[in-house]
Image (cartoon, rainbow, N blue to C red; front, side, top):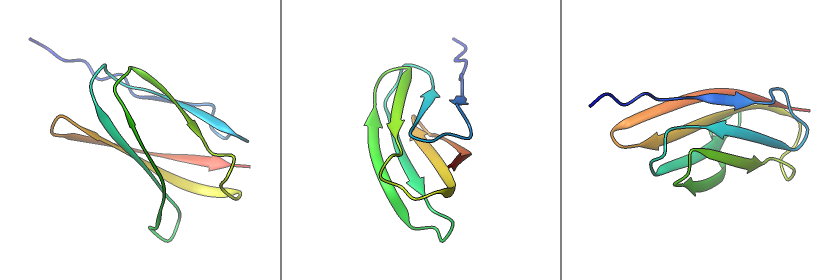
Length: 79
C-alpha cells in the first residue's frame, strides 16, 4: 500500500488563520517562534486543519506536524 502525503499550507502569509492539509491520520502540530519557543500546540485527526494564529504577534513562525513516524515542517508569515 502506498501512502501519499499531501502537505499544503495556505494562505501564506496570513493575518489570522492558516489551513494545513495532510493525510487522514493523527498529527501533533506545534508552532514555534523564531527563538525556538513552542507558542501553540494542537492535535488533528482529519485531513484538513485550520490553525488560529490571531493570538500571535506578527513575524515568522515554524510549523511542525508529527505523526506515524514522519515529521513535516514548514514556515508561515503572520502579518
